[in-house]
Length: 152
Image (cartoon, rainbow, N blue to C red; front, side, top):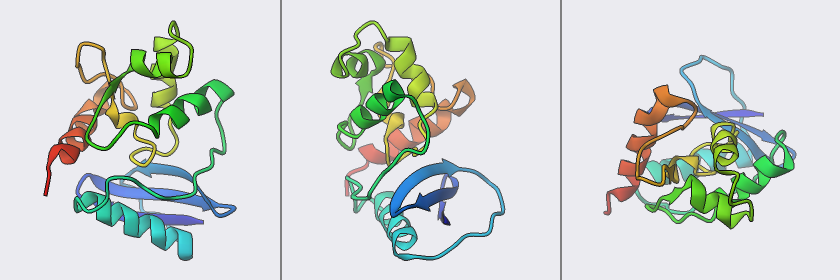
Protein backbone atom coordinates (compact mmCIF):
# COMPACT_ATOMS: atom_id res chain seq x y z
CA UNK A 1 0.00 0.00 0.00
CA UNK A 2 1.25 3.45 -0.85
CA UNK A 3 1.02 6.54 1.35
CA UNK A 4 2.15 10.12 0.91
CA UNK A 5 3.09 13.11 3.00
CA UNK A 6 3.58 16.65 1.68
CA UNK A 7 6.74 18.12 3.22
CA UNK A 8 8.43 21.44 2.61
CA UNK A 9 11.13 19.48 0.73
CA UNK A 10 8.73 17.77 -1.68
CA UNK A 11 6.13 15.03 -1.73
CA UNK A 12 7.19 11.97 0.27
CA UNK A 13 5.80 8.64 -0.89
CA UNK A 14 6.14 5.51 1.20
CA UNK A 15 5.35 1.84 0.77
CA UNK A 16 3.76 -0.22 3.56
CA UNK A 17 3.69 -3.97 3.13
CA UNK A 18 3.10 -6.83 5.59
CA UNK A 19 2.63 -4.31 8.44
CA UNK A 20 6.10 -2.79 7.92
CA UNK A 21 7.40 0.38 6.32
CA UNK A 22 9.38 -0.87 3.31
CA UNK A 23 10.33 2.18 1.25
CA UNK A 24 10.25 5.98 1.46
CA UNK A 25 11.27 8.47 -1.21
CA UNK A 26 10.94 12.16 -1.93
CA UNK A 27 9.43 12.53 -5.39
CA UNK A 28 7.26 15.00 -7.23
CA UNK A 29 5.07 12.31 -8.78
CA UNK A 30 1.31 12.18 -8.89
CA UNK A 31 0.53 8.72 -7.53
CA UNK A 32 -2.63 7.12 -6.17
CA UNK A 33 -2.26 6.39 -2.48
CA UNK A 34 -4.01 4.15 0.02
CA UNK A 35 -5.19 4.42 3.62
CA UNK A 36 -4.62 2.13 6.60
CA UNK A 37 -3.43 2.47 10.20
CA UNK A 38 0.30 2.20 9.40
CA UNK A 39 0.09 4.57 6.43
CA UNK A 40 -1.64 7.10 8.67
CA UNK A 41 0.94 6.57 11.44
CA UNK A 42 3.85 7.16 9.03
CA UNK A 43 2.14 10.38 7.90
CA UNK A 44 1.58 11.39 11.53
CA UNK A 45 5.20 10.75 12.54
CA UNK A 46 6.55 12.57 9.47
CA UNK A 47 4.33 15.53 10.38
CA UNK A 48 5.66 15.53 13.95
CA UNK A 49 9.26 15.23 12.68
CA UNK A 50 8.93 18.14 10.25
CA UNK A 51 7.31 20.22 13.01
CA UNK A 52 10.21 19.52 15.42
CA UNK A 53 8.01 17.46 17.74
CA UNK A 54 9.54 14.04 17.04
CA UNK A 55 13.19 13.12 17.19
CA UNK A 56 12.98 9.33 16.94
CA UNK A 57 10.63 7.46 14.65
CA UNK A 58 8.81 4.48 16.10
CA UNK A 59 7.70 2.53 13.05
CA UNK A 60 8.05 -1.12 12.04
CA UNK A 61 10.65 -1.24 9.28
CA UNK A 62 11.43 -4.02 6.84
CA UNK A 63 13.69 -3.98 3.82
CA UNK A 64 12.35 -5.55 0.60
CA UNK A 65 15.74 -5.45 -1.04
CA UNK A 66 19.40 -5.05 -0.27
CA UNK A 67 22.37 -7.24 0.51
CA UNK A 68 23.18 -8.34 4.04
CA UNK A 69 25.95 -5.71 4.07
CA UNK A 70 23.53 -2.95 3.01
CA UNK A 71 21.01 -4.02 5.64
CA UNK A 72 23.78 -3.92 8.29
CA UNK A 73 24.59 -0.35 7.22
CA UNK A 74 20.92 0.66 7.26
CA UNK A 75 20.48 -0.82 10.74
CA UNK A 76 23.57 1.11 11.91
CA UNK A 77 22.06 4.35 10.57
CA UNK A 78 19.15 3.88 12.96
CA UNK A 79 21.57 4.33 15.89
CA UNK A 80 22.60 7.87 14.90
CA UNK A 81 20.81 10.26 17.27
CA UNK A 82 18.64 13.09 15.98
CA UNK A 83 20.65 16.21 15.26
CA UNK A 84 23.98 14.37 15.18
CA UNK A 85 26.11 13.16 12.29
CA UNK A 86 28.55 10.33 11.78
CA UNK A 87 31.15 9.79 9.10
CA UNK A 88 31.10 6.96 6.60
CA UNK A 89 34.19 5.70 8.44
CA UNK A 90 32.29 5.71 11.73
CA UNK A 91 29.58 3.53 10.19
CA UNK A 92 32.14 1.18 8.63
CA UNK A 93 33.77 0.78 12.05
CA UNK A 94 30.40 0.30 13.75
CA UNK A 95 29.50 -2.65 11.51
CA UNK A 96 32.96 -4.17 11.90
CA UNK A 97 34.17 -3.45 8.35
CA UNK A 98 36.61 -0.53 8.79
CA UNK A 99 37.95 -0.76 5.22
CA UNK A 100 34.48 -0.66 3.64
CA UNK A 101 34.05 3.12 3.72
CA UNK A 102 33.11 3.43 0.05
CA UNK A 103 30.76 0.48 0.27
CA UNK A 104 29.06 2.19 3.23
CA UNK A 105 28.59 5.24 1.01
CA UNK A 106 27.04 3.12 -1.71
CA UNK A 107 24.75 1.43 0.83
CA UNK A 108 23.63 4.85 2.09
CA UNK A 109 22.92 5.89 -1.48
CA UNK A 110 20.66 2.85 -1.92
CA UNK A 111 18.81 3.27 1.38
CA UNK A 112 15.17 2.59 0.49
CA UNK A 113 13.71 4.36 3.55
CA UNK A 114 15.28 7.81 3.60
CA UNK A 115 14.69 10.26 6.48
CA UNK A 116 13.37 7.52 8.80
CA UNK A 117 16.53 5.44 8.23
CA UNK A 118 18.66 8.61 8.48
CA UNK A 119 21.34 8.34 5.80
CA UNK A 120 21.29 12.16 5.69
CA UNK A 121 23.15 12.09 9.02
CA UNK A 122 26.20 10.46 7.41
CA UNK A 123 28.85 12.88 6.15
CA UNK A 124 32.47 12.82 5.02
CA UNK A 125 35.17 12.40 7.68
CA UNK A 126 36.19 16.02 6.97
CA UNK A 127 32.63 17.24 7.56
CA UNK A 128 31.81 17.57 3.87
CA UNK A 129 28.34 16.95 2.48
CA UNK A 130 28.95 14.01 0.21
CA UNK A 131 26.59 11.49 -1.27
CA UNK A 132 22.87 11.40 -0.47
CA UNK A 133 21.40 9.75 -3.54
CA UNK A 134 24.13 11.27 -5.66
CA UNK A 135 26.01 14.54 -5.62
CA UNK A 136 23.07 16.46 -7.05
CA UNK A 137 21.06 15.88 -3.86
CA UNK A 138 23.52 17.07 -1.21
CA UNK A 139 21.43 20.23 -0.85
CA UNK A 140 18.55 18.12 0.49
CA UNK A 141 20.95 16.37 2.86
CA UNK A 142 22.09 19.75 4.19
CA UNK A 143 18.47 20.92 4.59
CA UNK A 144 17.60 17.84 6.64
CA UNK A 145 20.71 18.26 8.83
CA UNK A 146 19.85 21.94 9.33
CA UNK A 147 16.23 21.00 10.10
CA UNK A 148 17.44 18.78 12.94
CA UNK A 149 19.66 21.52 14.38
CA UNK A 150 16.64 23.77 15.00
CA UNK A 151 15.58 23.34 18.61
CA UNK A 152 12.11 24.40 19.73
